[in-house]
Image (cartoon, rainbow, N blue to C red; front, side, top):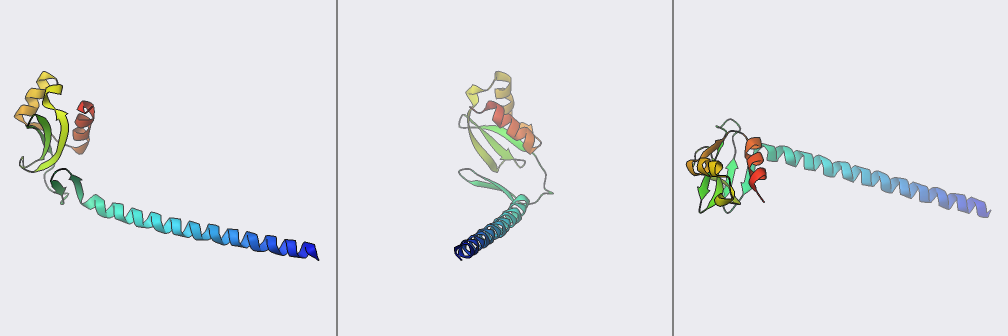
Length: 124
């Protein structure tokens, strides 16, 4: 008689564990689907927060960035050369002389990859 109770309790325990695992799996998939839909929404509108915010809303607009000097530091402007895209903490004096000259004149960078490669190379 006692073995029947033990088997019954074990079966109920396994059923509860299976239900908990299924519930976790369903909630995990739900969260991942929501996160994927958010990332799809964010990919259409890109923004980087600095002291102000620069937002690129239309993928068809002219790409490119200008690296310029602003108060002794490197600043990234959008292709219109008036909207600040990102303020960096890279001092102009830390750059090689020829790069300092290019940045002082307004160095053009055509893609996001080139921009972040430059920033990664010269940031501390």
